[in-house]
Image (cartoon, rainbow over the protein chains, first blue to last red):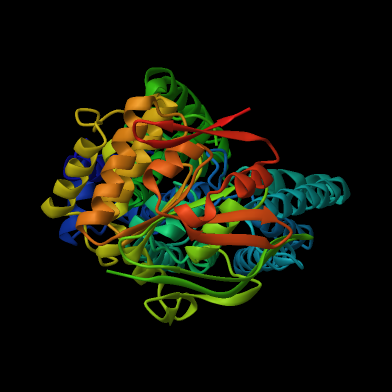
Length: 328
Length: 255
């Protein structure tokens, strides 16, 4: 697909998913209400629901999905591993341990978000520092360090869950599977996302080369070490921002870039921004369903991303298998 | 026109010494062959000369400037490397792969233009891969992949070609086609090349200078006539050889 047509399609999908999300919920809202907000003359209850409740949550879902998908695409090319996702290097684990500690202490809101962000960054520094070690910084070392640190965080999460009183468990599990119900308008997330997109597009051609291997990229003029550090820090920041606003939502970062790759999108200058848009759509859709299918009961959004994503991904993989290369 | 020099080069991997005080000068128009047994460090030496690996001692200079003070982009416009086989983790088409050779000529936000596509198409035609532009690299055979590597190098259009076993997996026709093509470039465009080759007779046909790596840091270099003697070659490979006079010059056969 031509990049222009692809982006037109993704913008259309984004608009549809956002309107669908805004219009869905326990209080029925019609086109009239949506239009009146755009005109800025709405006053009624419907307007308040839309502006105060649905818009922040929809925006947060979109930005979080975009952050995760972009981080996933970056991690996959950084680690040259199709199985990499934003959480593979233990970033979410650090965030989760810090966030659960706050929930255990009964703290929410800004405490929770601050702790998640700090936990994610500390985990990133820990993995980065340890993977340097004595020897040179190489990708297998980074991947192994990250996976092992993530396993450690996993144990700590289990420990915290085992310690927690019954009434806290539900909130903790929701956080671990993704929860957008406390989201506010994601200004910070949006800034991180835009920075990430600009950097990703600017280094896109270098990333195309990196996908062919480090030596190939270096021999064609890419400064490998600075590029890898940049991508590592960027992907970590994107992940930290996503985890901060919505807990740990799996799957989006893994499958969204692959969906596009399976449709033949391989140039990272197109793939990365397109992943962000598609990730946003997917998470908005998933979150809308998470809060409506069993209303008034809410489901963790992570369940819905998987329910929508698994069949979509398997379909694409089945039909696009000849496009996919051999394993690295 | 470029000159690649190594000064007092010392390279070790662990306890294995590849060279200790190697002085080497590859001038424009020269074709060098590196010979040696498996594991003696031919590839490592090639990577070091390309600036992909730091030497333990000494330095590499491009037209008199140390590689360490040049940008990777600048180096990539002068030195092109064909690496040994590698696997791609992600799918790529033939055209996408050839186009990466244009990277050193493009600015960070610049997209490949008509001239880059023309260079890529020309390179594919030169290695007889035209018509395969949209094929996925993973569907190519080993020899086709090797030619694709050469095509990428041709679209990169460097002054110095460093080639690590370029004819691997190639059939006879393409071995000759590719090496003829490269040799023609070195002659008409004052470029130079350095080949790691295991095919002694192929090396003899295309190289005018040789560097022999004996292991333990011992090296020998010079023109083909001076270096490729029966004694030197038998010692190099640890195998007795016989020279035959064929219609195109000397042919070495293992006994």
